[in-house]
Amino acid sequence: MAAVKASIGTELYKIEIKSATGNIIIADEPIEKGGQDKGFSPKELLVSALGACTCATVRMYADRKVWSLENVNAEIELSEENGQTKFIRKLQFTGTLNDEQRARLLAVANGCPVHKILTNSIVIETVLV
Image (tube, rainbow, N blue to C red; front, side):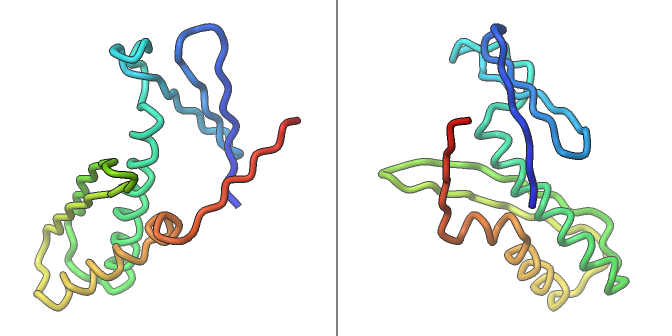
């Protein structure tokens, strides 16, 4: 199970996020929303999770297969229109890969754990402590 703790004090809208393993990142709102733009916005963090997971999953698979994958680039955009949320993910694989390998890496990207989470039913349970 992945778990984080997020907290905000009086500094608008700077949020400190700590992982269970001790890593810390800062989230903030953009200046036009009253923040100071000191970190990723919450939506940027969500999109970042998909990008990071996609890149790592593809890299792990290519390494296991000993394929000549030099770099994975993922560009991800989030749009929200008419009650629908859409992630647009553009991938680029560089290296000496044939068409079959590229197709397999695309399938692997579509199977990354965050992709699976975002495309399955999601339940958010909130408890006041």
